[in-house]
View 1 (cartoon, rainbow, N blue to C red):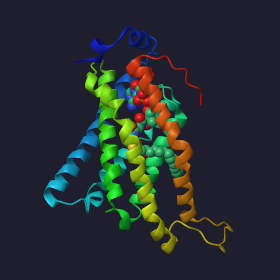
View 2 (cartoon, rainbow, N blue to C red; view 1 turned 180 degrees about the horizontal axis):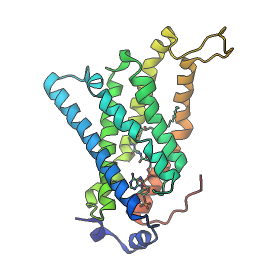
View 3 (tube, rainbow, N blue to C red; view 1 turned 30 degrees about the vertical axis):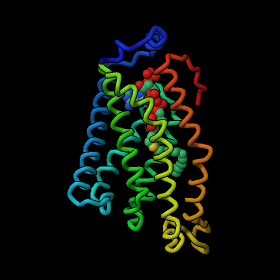
View 4 (cartoon, protein in one colour; view 1 turned 90 degrees about the vertical axis):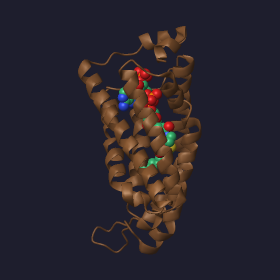
Length: 241
Ligand SMILES: CCCCCCCCCCCCC[C@@H](O)CC(=O)SCCNC(=O)CCNC(=O)[C@H](O)C(C)(C)COP(=O)(O)OP(=O)(O)OC[C@H]1O[C@@H](n2cnc3c(N)ncnc32)[C@H](O)[C@@H]1OP(=O)(O)O
């Protein structure tokens, strides 16, 4: 069932109001979204295979970190897409979402082997994977004008649970990293040094954890507004960045 069969009159109006994007942008976005859907599907299959073969999640992160780093880093292009107006999304919201993921992958989980087997890592990995398969397949089918209703439904409903669960996974992972970071002083710069600058990664991580309190609700309410717009056809005036 394609979404066009499901659309109510309000939503039809919403669709006709969409700003058109050129054929080159459409082609590029379609390729990008297909590649990202495939990437996250590869990660999902790798996770299932790993668990079936070993019966544990221990060693899972190590086995898939290269693929995860590649596809999560590739998502930086989403900032380029909204900065150039190819997609109608807030640069600020996208920047917070993408940078927090890149930070989790590169500067927390991949940097600290000692925390890679934590259950919280498995938690955010599963949640991110479910989210991204749904999100990128939503964009792909939407661009091809053949959006099955269940994908649209999943895109704008699953996040209600998955977003907070993902945040819990991320925060617990950073929390698990704190003792190691404090003990080793990794990524920290102590005085005296030739630059006369000090930086304590331990406190930086604490600040990052606290920043979830003001920032996460912004993302969550953004998604709730998108949900009302897409599923219920409400016209929502977004503030400029
Ligand atoms: C340096 C240290 C930094 C530390 C920062 C600390 C910050 C802490 C707070 C952050 C917490 C984040 C936690 C998070 O990582 C946890 C999880 O993700 S858990 C999993 C659940 N998550 C989700 O469901 C959210 C997933 N993410 C997103 O949905 C997006 O990234 C987001 C930007 C949040 C929202 O997306 P968007 O605004 O694009 O909404 P829509 O999907 O409805 O799209 C709007 C319109 O844009 C078009 N669009 C967008 N992207 C594309 C694309 N790739 N291809 C084609 N079209 C695209 C879309 O179709 C819509 O167009 P229109 O309105 O015209 O229909």
